[in-house]
Length: 579
Ligand code: ATP
Ligand code: MG
Image (tube, rainbow, N blue to C red):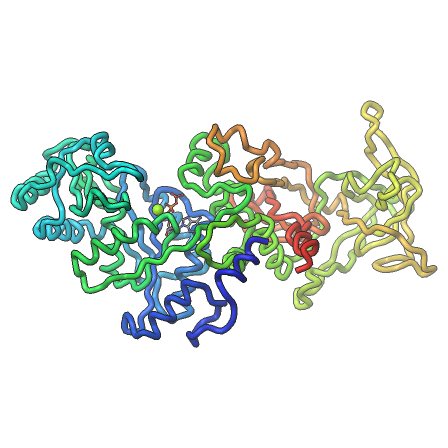
């Protein structure tokens, strides 16, 4: 619902001034169109996606990736991948590798433009020296605690540091000694000299460099001072010739500082920072810090646990890159925060899989059916349609025999009125096969649960209707017992019990959905799934879309993840709202 309101009110519709666009317009594209019309940047459009390698990418990052790379594609511009690796204590090469894999998998290509903020450490250092020489930066000896106190509050101005008026020479010397490793962590910083009375806290002599005696995953121990995000980001953008630096709303208040650094330095390029609202999704956490906590406390099985909102988790779960891109297009881009319903993402996944996933039959909770009047030891092969949405997908042959499995919950001994599936004395259709009628039920003497259903089949109903015109009210999926393969199936539900887990500040354990993972071990699948490769996706008829697990499935073990069920909550929402 939110996405639609948002689209109409803020992103606008209709033709745009740019002739090379493939997407509906949004306010960012409007800004770019205006810049192009005004002849800015010599007609160039150059964006970047700047992840910090301190965790895996999540679906929110996918929005940013689709936005930045999508704009570059549609304006025949360029988009860089740049690792914003200025905080070595939290970063790791594992994340660098994972991020590259995820961006590629989503279908985007940075070509030869892979950059790291750490590539610019020397340039950044020289920029800092230039600011010192211009009297625009100073070395400050205040401790982190004192820095906080001097900063003031939203209602009270800050206080000038007692070190603010050091001479240029003294600042140059101290900064060189900071770099040389003469001082302990936290003992000094380099700060911009702006305005301690500014109503914008970011402008109150912000820190540009801090001392951090930590090895960096790329530069090793070459540096013991590291630039802050605010200082490094704008300069990295300028050095790469970025024209439009697109970021999320929390950086809006940092924009004056972004512009201030670039104005002081005159690097020959002044990118335009544009902020948009980050993606929030119901039932989903989007903070890397909290996702890391889930992994470290082992509340999930890793960053690529299929319940995680990470790209790696969604890939393993069976989501396609096309469906994630379609989702990002549909939610659009706005200036106002909103929360998108998870059902919309799942709707996009279904829409894509419906077109492409082959249909097969699988029984998750098997109940044995014996066809009493079917010849012992006989097998026949029945023609089944691979994908009704795609005639080119053709048909396959499915074996039928005397002993079959159906789903336990497709049978009830004492059915209520609204239950139309199999019951004693009742007739149903087996998909692609025959009408069968239940004539007897064997039960477990202890539990009373049905163990074997005895049925008869009508040979005249093979693959179709009864010649005498009699009807059945249900069609069931099934597999032939002797021909079926064993499989493990993992069913997933929301990871959290509350729709807004981001707002919860207790231990995440308390809001984890205990039913978010259900493992079914004794499943039976049709023999055509022999040799299914990790990552292959299928529709199990009547049950949902499933994907062969890339980690635990192997030549002698079939493991499936349920990607999504067939029930489309989003379609229901749309219907009730009459859109
Ligand atoms: P976190 O706050 O969880 O650490 P982050 O925003 O700091 O995430 P980055 O690696 O810095 O993570 O993000 C890279 C880019 O992705 C940034 O431009 C950021 O604005 C964007 N991004 C991050 N989260 C979202 C989101 N939920 N929706 C849209 N864009 C996002
Ligand atoms: Mg960030």
